[in-house]
Image 1 (cartoon, rainbow, N blue to C red):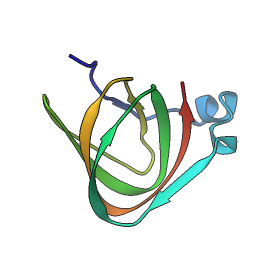
Image 2: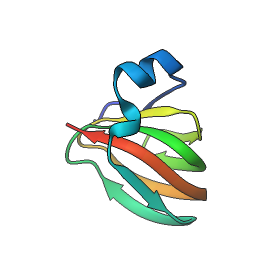
Image 3: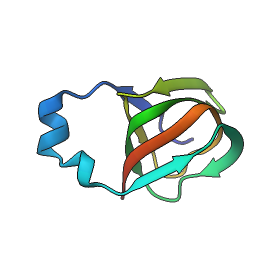
Length: 90
């Protein structure tokens, strides 16, 4: 079984230290789709609101949250408000 999704609110210092705002960005309109993580992803939501459904439950996150998706996770994304995020793979 895959690890769990981790959601937390990072400090401004951490965002600067990890240079999060220089990471690539990804944007998507409100929609639903299945997704599989073939590698670990860390993302920081700049805009939006999302619900991600996994075999163990539903995780919600929104602008200002930092989310870690473990490698091997299968899930269904439900984007409730258009999303813009910075992300880092691996």
